[in-house]
Length: 117
Image (tube, rainbow, N blue to C red; front, top):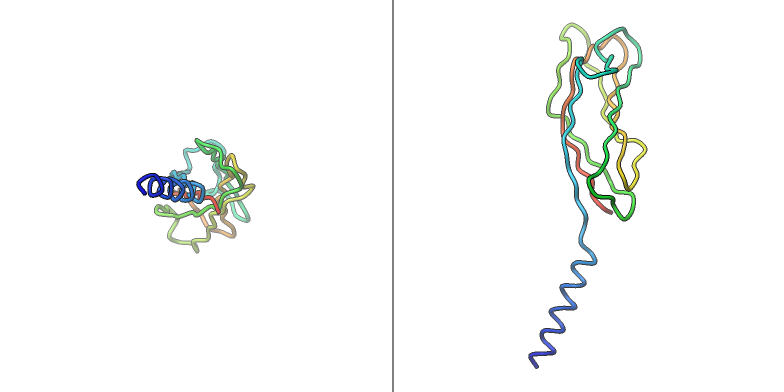
């Protein structure tokens, strides 16, 4: 009876491990001191891209969740910005920060979370 119980526990643990999600997270920050950053200059559509590389490769393409917890923008104009994950692969993604019109964005920071489906 003890062997059967141990075998069932082992199989249950194996099933849980097989269905376990992989989760990775990190933070990002870009501002006017970052090389190539121009979201605080000129007008029209402007984009800044950060290449995020995962510490450990996913088995398949993960889902990405992005947050913004820091925003430095000029108060005299409308504040327009978009933060997106593009070109997502099992090895990483491109985090793009975009502004447009006459908005002046001096800095954006936040967190990202990647999880298996």
